[in-house]
Image (cartoon, rainbow, N blue to C red; front, side, top):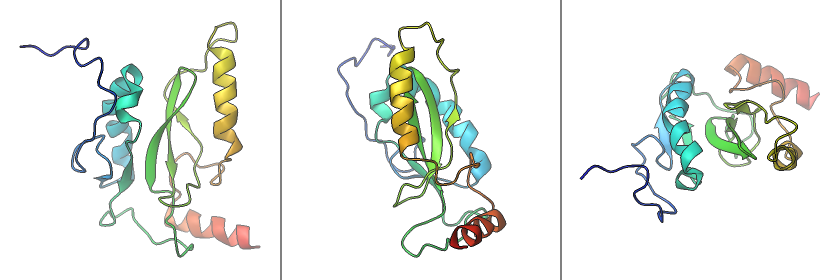
Amino acid sequence: RDVGERDFLALESIILPKGVYGGIGYEFQRISDVPGIISTLYPIYKQRPILLKNSCAELSRGSPDWYHGVVRYDTPPFGIVFVAAGSRVGYQWETLHLFAACEVIWLDPEPDRESIDYEKYIEELKEIEQHGYFYHGFQQPPTEEEYHHFWAERRG
């Protein structure tokens, strides 16, 4: 039997293994791999966001892009998560424990100001921005050099 988009409508969540795109704790090898991973998962998220609600992925500690951070109990922003404001979907990089985030990379355009979704979009966007973008000016993890410069400036 062919499985289509109308099958499993009552499915509210799916827990995929770590080795599968969208699996909880999926590890990617390079920061540059993420746009491809996101483009694979985006149609699923757009159609049934609840299925990927708890999905998160992170940079493998064996990656050549990995480096140690200056905060002993957290990492640089090496995790990625989907975010949504109204009908607008994007993703952002965040630290693995304290959830200090980079700026959102939006995949959808901003809703039209006249649309019925615009008010909900603005409300949910404010929630996202209320947490602040700790790594302001970065849409992806800074290089190791940028990271250490960023922290040197913060420490004054």
